Image 1 (cartoon, helix red, strand yellow):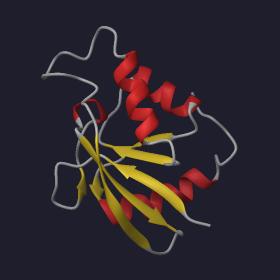
Image 2 (cartoon, rainbow, N blue to C red):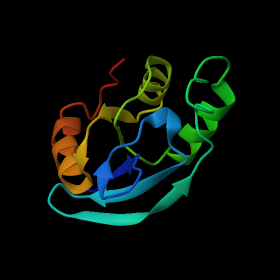
Image 3 (tube, rainbow, N blue to C red):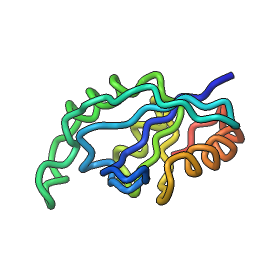
Length: 121
């Protein structure tokens, strides 16, 4: 069984982008041993500018969740409480990680398997 993972990255084969500032996610499938790149999905950033992460972001968040609906795990260097809770309710496990993408995916899939049928708020 493969797990689909979304990764927020600014490049360099690293998990190094905050969820709110991401304008795209790299999508990977993994069976826990191998990691396969699937593609890139463009999104509208949840936060606009450096400090504008307040206000009504429901529509943007709904769009992001729709685009990532087939992903089980989302990796980013940071994520706010509201998007974290919304992703959990949608069945996507948001994890804060930094470092190499492949290593972070393999580590996170092991962690995520413990919560396969659980939403963590």
